[in-house]
Image (cartoon, rainbow, N blue to C red; front, top):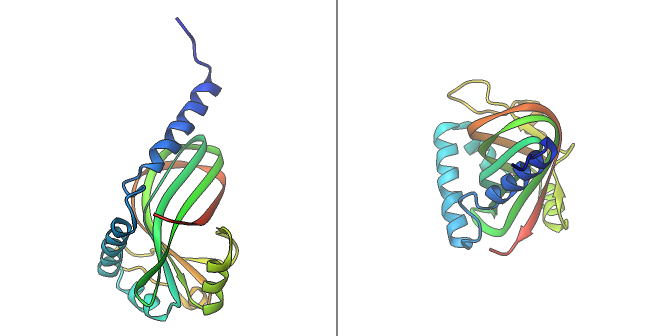
Length: 185
């Protein structure tokens, strides 16, 4: 009987996770299907967290990721696809790919929206070859079950991220990075 080492098992789990994440329900179905998922995601966000509607009205643009899948066992990965909307119209499509390393186990899926609050932040995002989430982004924290809101400090940030509709369970302490890349669906 062949014995599998922990390292081989961990690498196989991460590779399997990466492949599963690539087929997270959106993959390769074209712009129309991504737009339909984006519309559903925005509808859900606005109905569940009414404060986000004002963020959307004030934003120069929004990147909507309807479904991001992440999983890990020591090493982890994440993937999702979405659309950049300016003035309510999809102008580009993007993917997000992430990697993490550290003590972690589990898998989860979630939606997120990046609100570009200034034309400069939107332009920087659109002109980059690949935008990495970093220091210029603030998170709006869900402090109550019925309301998502940004405080005055967050509202002044050039990019605000709202994460919602989490499903699954993931534990750990990791170092993570994520990159957004323009795609052609």
